[in-house]
Image (cartoon, rainbow over all chains, first blue to last red; front, side, top):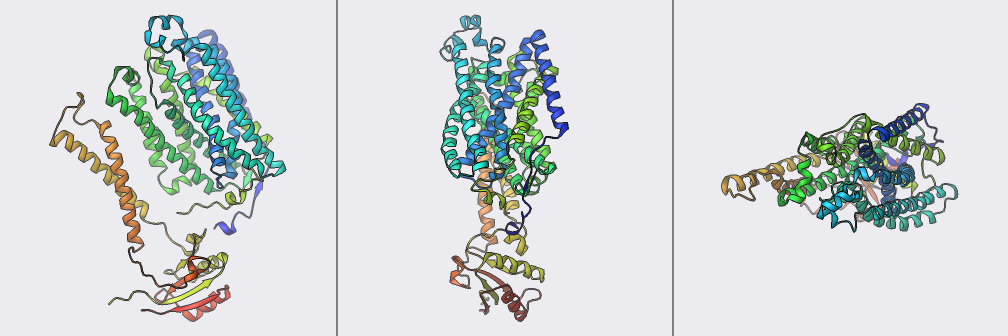
Length: 399
Length: 175
């Protein structure tokens, strides 16, 4: 009963468990070794796996900022106590800035349009050089990542400043900033995914590609958010502020965007399948050969059907162990999805997965965990002075 | 003629907390058919009264399954059985082309069956309920205990409600 529970409100200073710290630094070390060895021994493979993992974690960081922004601009009350978790994910954004510049070093191994011989021999690619050229690509990458960093700086900055001074003006300022960010994000993330993933096959295009990547971004972000909520509840750093009601609504969001992903993925597939134009079907044909057909169906089953049915009952959304299992499945499938977008373009279209991919995932996973832990150590785990905090504390999902 | 409403006892409160306590107390006394009338949804009222989850989601789910099957049946029957036409050399039964229709019918059947179940469970379109107090739509809260409820004892109930701070206790006649 909302009116007389939550008397026990408690938020303590975050102290990362030693095991988690060790794990994060071990992952980082494994990743760095893999990256250095890979650069010497297998350049094409290391850059493909770099791109896949870089995109995966960039999505999580941007998703964290997007979640905070939509809750700011809709003046949502329920999510105030979990907003700090999504803001923590944005602390990875500086890594996107640096990781993007590192990626430029591997461009000639990844993007056919960066190779003058390909451009000279293929008139379709040559016609696109006004957009797809190294200089403009780097300029866009820098502009986008710098823009995201600036929005993160102000939006998250205002939020943590409020913890000390308690001024409501920070909340008001964040409404405008969040509207600006969402508009900026819609354009830049579309072009970011077109640049990084779609242009791996420069002869192909899909106008819905940006939204497809966004659907995966938001679905995986919500899965991570649910995992952080459960972690914080179980370790007891936060008591009373974050309840099973917040988990329930976050997982409702997750279920909704599971359907959204399927909707967008099908919209992209069906139009291409129906029109049956060779320059468009190329993409799906590559993903139906050499065993990729199995992965394509695995995406349909494990990214949509299984999570959707698993999250349908009310009890499932309030059961922590169940939510952990589904969130991990969603995150695995997000990786598989990006891998499925990147890898058929390389290695003769053969299915390739192994030590290099795991190592590069470890590199970014380690960095992501370190960013999260340092954010949580630096700032309060709950935005305790937010003017809408009472609404969040008394949040209650009726049936 | 069947009677339009059962008689019983109605307690009127001016405070949200009091009505939650009164509802909890009624449930603890073993009453099960009573109801609360409030101007807006009161958090925690479902638990206080002991209302079970609504059956509507299950109706929606069954409606959705029926809609999906009907969509599959209509599209397959039309394009492969009743009037087969070769479109772009694709197979007669091309599932990707049928999915939009199956999806739309799933939503349509789920939505309409939910509305129908909702109306049925609320006994709509019955539009002439007994007005316990006209202010229940603005600032007052009421608990109504019908006289056929288990362990109904108007004298005892009236005392309980008065003790919990009821502003008024009304005996509603059957008619």
